Image (cartoon, rainbow, N blue to C red; front, side, top):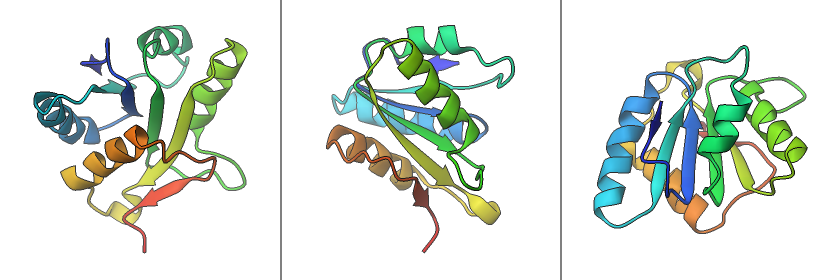
Length: 133
């Protein structure tokens, strides 16, 4: 499921129920004139790389939000997306974000902050965490 992604410059990719909250944030930010979008991953294997790359064609910056930690490496969806972009010759900025560890809640303000950081170019190769102090 993609939501308002065709002209989106900042895109959040995630799987799971947080997509509903993110969709609400996208609606509000779109009404304020921001070009943001959501790409929800419904199927992890086989990984739908071709469809994802097509959906991201206009994105300038991307955040991959996951509820999984992979010790010693990046989380799985982020890894697959970054590798796919690299193999296809794409040079998009992608931020890995881990959220809701230990059942912690994620709020609309957290998702808005992710979009704000993407728009401001605050993207690094380090994994960012939401809800962990």
